Image 1 (cartoon, rainbow, N blue to C red):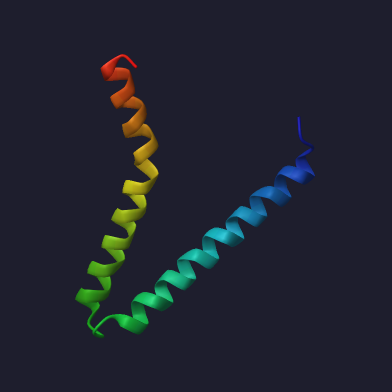
Image 2 (spheres, one colour):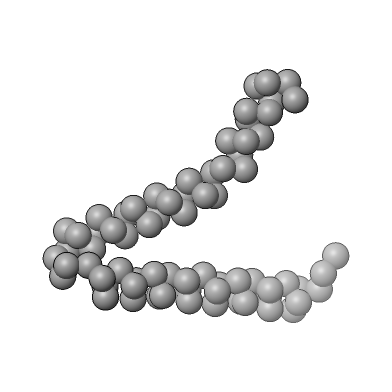
Length: 70
């Protein structure tokens, strides 16, 4: 088992990556949206939706294999 200090370092690094990704996505959206809150909210939701689909793909593939008996 990893020592607690090493695990904390891993978690800290992951959190930094997540925060950087969100910050960069926010920047891209704010720079390219038409300036309205409505469009910014819409684009933010669509980006989140794409990431959710990407995250769910492995589970969907696993269920399809299970259902097909593969």
